Amino acid sequence: MTEVTLATFNVHWGRGPVRGGLVPFDVPTACANLDAEVIVLQESWAPDDAPSQHDAAAALLGWSVVAASLGRSTLHPQPAVIGPPGSVGVGEGEWGVAVLSRFPILRYRQIDLPPLRLDKVRRVLLLVDLDVDGSPLTVIGTHFSHLEFGSVAHAGPLRRSLPASDQAAVLLGDMNMWGWCLSAIAPPGWTRIGSGNTWPAHRPISRIDHLLCSEAVTEVWSDVSADLGSDHRAVRARIRIP
Image 1 (cartoon, rainbow, N blue to C red):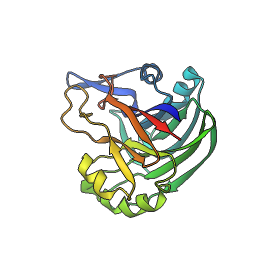
Image 2 (cartoon, rainbow, N blue to C red; image 1 turned 135 degrees about the vertical axis):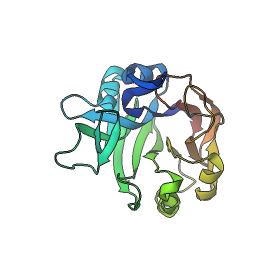
Image 3 (cartoon, rainbow, N blue to C red; image 1 turned 60 degrees about the vertical axis):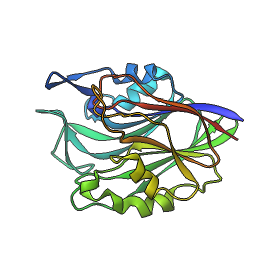
Image 4 (cartoon, rainbow, N blue to C red; image 1 turned 180 degrees about the vertical axis):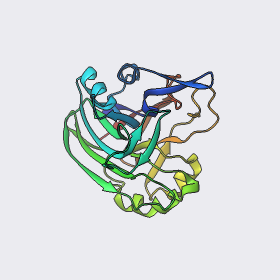
């Protein structure tokens, strides 16, 4: 059996709330402080004129990274998504989801989820196949929309897209829903792991960031990080795979 530590972290453009405002924090350093071997980031900022936060984190760690843009974004006057990916003439960069890995990435694929009428950005599943010291593991990174925007419409595509439960696989992401909601839409053989609230980071009252594991995966331990600067706290888990 092989063990690996994974984390999911919504970095909120590298900006966190402090006394009613937003202040920058160092995303690469925050990722290093997670002490994980695979990290899924949401709301990672990729400015047009500088390296993205996920590329900078991967460079600091010496890891591989794959990413998907979910929308055109701005930091002025505050962080916001203002258009679909690739929109011309709007924003100063792209906003999206990324998977960083200490282990070799064998292949990856992006599955676009159906657009939601009230949601102005793209939503995807980023499936990344890893070689974890000779053992295969599929990591699925995502960032769901809000329930009030109709994200339950993505339940069917999620069930159809996740690997079979007898394969070693983990879904990580900001799901924007409570744990019981995620458990209700999970396919048979997939189980939510971990406990503890993640949002808002300064005084968490809700858990909207989750890990969902196939039955081929065994949880060793899980926890919620300290406040690392974002408006979310990160979730970590150590798992055992065949």
